[in-house]
Image (cartoon, rainbow, N blue to C red; front, side):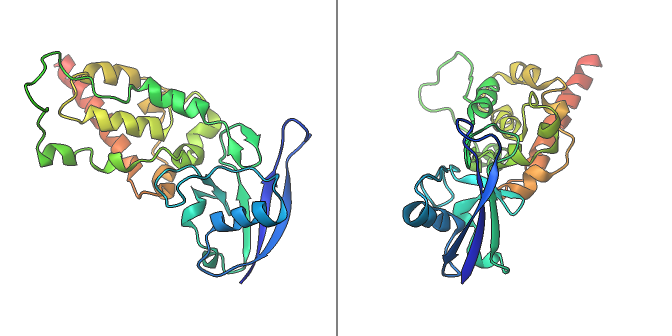
Length: 237
């Protein structure tokens, strides 16, 4: 199978504007887009820059936009693109460092903002903090998140406001808000109860569409809104 890769190229140090460079390869249908990018760097153009690590959809390092869809290059097979034309771009809504590599520092700063760790009560149990299977199931889906940033890159709200926390950070907050072992519910809710927090989410659902781990992100964020609304209603009654 012959494929044509239209790859975004841009080096802010030396380039005035981004461009697309065309590479052609003979591939097997079961090869992945990541395999193609590796071959381009090994066989044609060693200057091409992109991130990758595990190559098996577990680390999220090779997230990029492929034919207009934010996804992982290691999970997309060339046979999925029947016309053999594959356009590869960096994740949108992020500053490009070079080619397909974007600056994820603001992304991880927002993850840190929601305090992504357990804050239990001060009384230390003699053994582990017990949790039932039912309690675990409340946030079990969110644990699959690998912080690839696809959801944040695809979010229409992020296009308009870079200060919005974004679906990934809100999903990480959801994971701890509904953890029975955590004792900082009100503190966490206070971080999210603002227009740039959970109320910035307009439930477009693009986050759910692009999630490589099939997490229903929109549903999880809706649960935060519902819980916050119920908490406020109890406070006023």
